[in-house]
Image 1 (tube, helix red, strand yellow):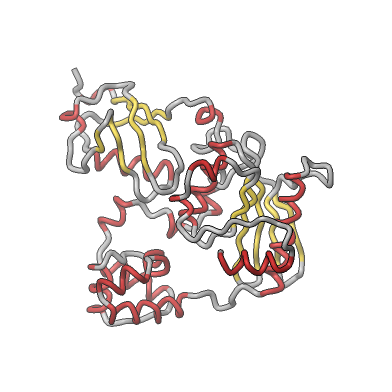
Image 2 (cartoon, rainbow, N blue to C red):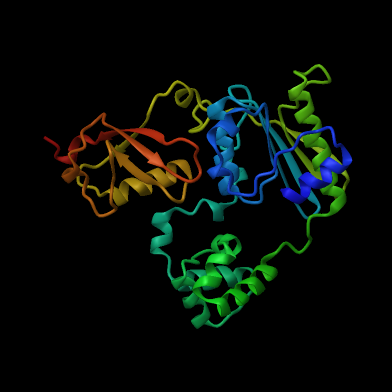
Length: 316
């Protein structure tokens, strides 16, 4: 960020640029609320999803970009008008980013070894078990777990992880020409938004770039009224109803939440308490129509859900 700022200011010294070298989710809220448009060039889906929910919550436009190899895309999110990133998440968000915590806890080292084999990578099973013990349970973990933390735990194995990351990288890196095209398309959309459409209508579609055929294609994405980020119910502050069995555990409720919202790390809050996995719902005194809140690193604000117990649950 700092190097980019210096380079840009050399190109145009009359532009004021602030650079922040930290996790976006730790930014001062006043900075985020003061922007006119967000332009996302992020390298991971967790933060992209968080920024998407922030833009919708603040009703700020978002121009999201992505590129890999010879392909790239740009999506403009106008809250309340166009599809957000979650509207078609089932099709567009990679499955390895959606693995639920409940699923991860059931995984075994053998599952990680199988995932590596699918990527044509064979390593000793003892190393797989060591990776697993460090919290690396999926290919996604292997790619994105901060290397600094791993080096503190085990400097020797961190070198092996760097080697594995190189093997997992796309066969084709992001081609500079393609990156320039995506940057140009995104910049134009940002300018259209800033100028209120006076220099052209904002493109309310997913724009896909194919570097092989040198072609840009518009893909219509319809905003889903039932989207758990930008849907009508969410915008009106209505909680989403989830049916549960009175005899189930918090663990079971987390499974349903994870499956419904495609979030891997749900934490459930009831009143002022964060619920523990092994707590039985019947012991917490939750009643039908009570409101619970789902916290996740993929959302700027918690998701409100309303619990409804099934009739044969034995609830008095």
